[in-house]
Image (tube, rainbow, N blue to C red; front, side, top):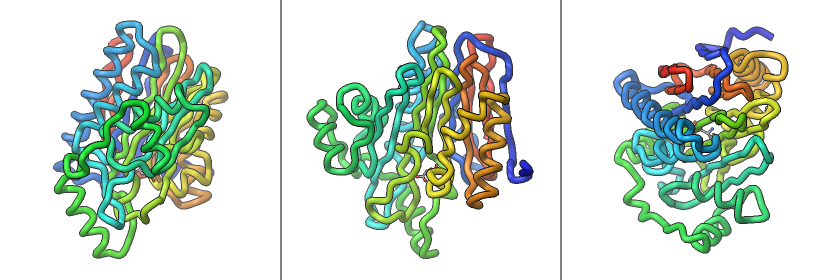
Length: 307
Ligand code: ASP
């Protein structure tokens, strides 16, 4: 297998006491929007890093970082999420704790401000891993979350994109914007979280990889934490997040991301990106798309970002 399909990668190979890496989605973002995406990732990584620097858990850090990205209308998650074929928002999100291997997710969720917070609640307060649609709404309301007014979460850009993709009679997410975070805390725990609106013009009820443990999100203290982005149908078929964390048993975080994305491309022709926090706090990412915004912060003073 060659790694020719990999268009970029980055790594921080040295072990770290704590570290966090976030992404703002793999895709083909217009050059003029890239600075917005990078700045959003930097803000989210800084918010997560503040949790870790104060002795907080990797789980709290990735949730915080993803909430910041969900609240940023530039991204395809929470406010600003893309629209399905009915012109509605349906949200997917998941979170996983590498210490206990517990996980929670929501999918095909109508507008709520922070789906990742509901996913966390599914993890800790339900007997289940994944709740969908109406059932997820009932659970969220019972847990005290409030439904959001769809108009408060739908942006002009999301409407314009839906019109453009409808005109092509397609379903796609070339504009990226799915969000995710991975972290390792000072106690050696890793965690991962991912949140998205999915694909523009997707069929109502379509669920992608992001809420699926092992595809969009995976975390295991014995290997690594991983959040993925890209063509969800491909990523589910190769269990991309689990494949990538497993690969860190024998190689660096950066190489693990490169190899698993190359494998996905070879076997399914699907493209995307992955971010990884190794159990030793090392970091790595790779993409097979033209862009993927990201930002990283570590306790040893690294502050890096790119797209
Ligand atoms: N993976 C997401 C999905 O297919 C979309 C993305 O990451 O851009 O729903």
